[in-house]
Length: 155
Image (tube, rainbow, N blue to C red; front, side):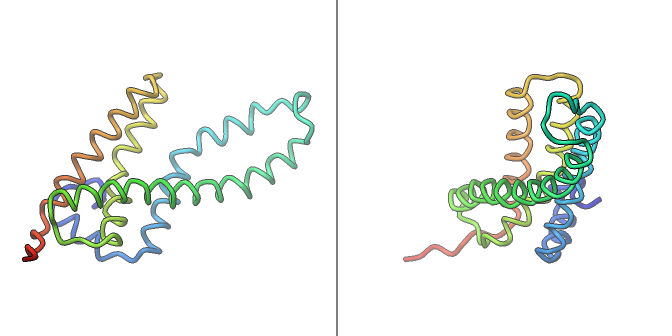
């Protein structure tokens, strides 16, 4: 619930106290729920005469490799977005560490992810959906980074 209340200061500080394993687990469950309809659709409409593997083997591979793919997407995607947030932090000269930015990035991506999945189902073009994701995410990160105090000026 706090990730949906972002960029409010109370929600941000509450989420920043969470451990990194809780954050990764949260992202895993979120992405699993968001991609569940696609997973079910691909299993139901699998044409076994087109593929060389049986439906049972496909489901087993799907259940093993799909969660690994989600974890990979979490780690790489959030790390890249946190790198962009690190540049924003540097530009705004705020006192934040990469670990704090990584967690804030993970939670700030909740609403844009949900919105982009919804836009996919109403057949909005991917480029437009990506622009909306980046726009909302950048706004959230800007608002959250500016809450933190400025870094002391080195002389």
